[in-house]
Length: 303
Image (cartoon, one colour):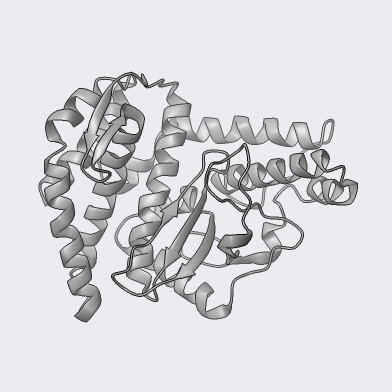
């Protein structure tokens, strides 16, 4: 398998970031020379999407003041609310789930950075920073650097409770998740959602169009899913398995038991996907991307 650093370094994604960021900025500030970037290309890409969504919503609401704010803040104000982590500055916020909108851009709740955004409480910022550190030590720093720029922490839960987390394609680089008071568990879930963001960008950057007619059984959902969702699961869950196997060497107590049970469960679920995964990969037209997806699946099966 590629090293993890090599695995996540897909050159077409970098080109996608640059081109789309420039297009978004040209829409929001036509005729204005973009400023010299102070963040990574991946972070610029993520934050430009927040600025675009915020500006569009303000325009539709005829809110000139908020629209002008986004024009003046192409990073959606992230600089003022960011915290340092080993993978770069991150935005960590705690929006109230019940207050998050649902609209045509997403069937699930979402949050857009804006003039009212405030950084999460210090203890949650530390939890997040420690989670990024844990992921970076396991080799997933590049993944989170590019694909988990904005972290929206939602409901605090106890270890063992169901944790909901998700991403939406309109806000790449942003993750939404419940959390427990443990950075390793949070790191696991960050890797899962960042993996979804990576694959969305990889498919777009390589021009892969996956047929929605082929369907495969998903052991995670216990239902038949289109190839797109099946391949996403067969990528994101193996990434968490690789991380968990690494994390077990440095955890103890309840967290160690929880992660051990998680890895055992995932081994069984992933094994059942092997025949279908090989067939689903045939729908990926880009050879490089197909080989990367196959390598991660294969490596996780060997755990």
